[in-house]
Amino acid sequence: MRTNVDHATAHPVSDATVFGRDDAPGIAQLAEDLLAFIPVYYNGNRTLVVTSQGIFYLPWRCQWVKTNVLQHFAISQRDLRRACEQDLNLSLFTPLVITSAKVVYAPMKVREPISRNDGAHGYFRIDAIRSADSISSTATRLGIGDIASIDILMPRPKVLTRVHEARSSLILQEARNVPYPSL
Picture 1 (cartoon, rainbow, N blue to C red):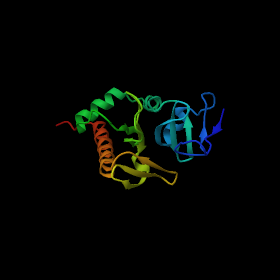
Picture 2: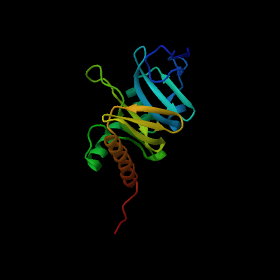
Picture 3: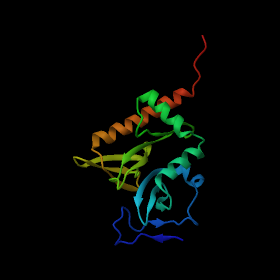
């Protein structure tokens, strides 16, 4: 059942389509065009999805979306994390690198966690980020293509660091797929 978020809702995007479990598009339909996916609260945990076609809400948690995107591209989350630990010395907030599509998503804090193990980080495709404007000493507004502006609860230098780490991770992951020359 599709509904719209009404204007009275304290929610990031008004008038966005809210999908139910029965009519939500599958990850296979979204994976190639996914610009950002962000955890939100709207009648429970949902995911705000930004694609080049628009913005909508999926009925699943952001972690579920992340796991299924990686499965769609046949990527092991554990192996990806280990590679980031080896290459960049990152064990937390590792970027999602999809070398087959030459795409990488940087993790950014988008909300304050309500409880322990509450997902507070969204994932943003770095080639879709058009601007990163500081709106306070602890917040940054990201422009995602011509589609959306999302407020990040991180200072601008930290946002730029995450984007650079993600870019470096993509470069290093691509280098892993190139065989070393034999001597």
